[in-house]
Length: 109
Image (cartoon, rainbow, N blue to C red; front, side):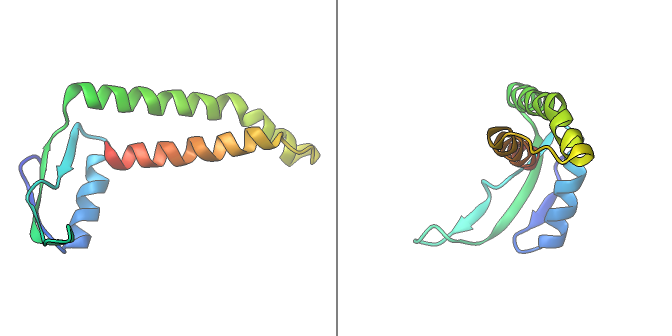
């Protein structure tokens, strides 16, 4: 993957590369995308580059932190499923935020 170039507009290739990169220390760089005067992408290419070590570690650490929160509050979900006792609203909201953040971080990383 490293060094691969993906044509702008080739969404299938971009998505396949994104999936393959989830477990590797690489990312898709968009600095070669050409933009018009309004800032809209009009052409160019994406390139697969090595992930900077510090960014990779900080993203991984944050994913681990958010996953730990989900693990620690899983019992609320189990209790609700088994007994019908509702989990506190703030826990439910924070769990949703944690899942969203993990997904976003995995897309960046």
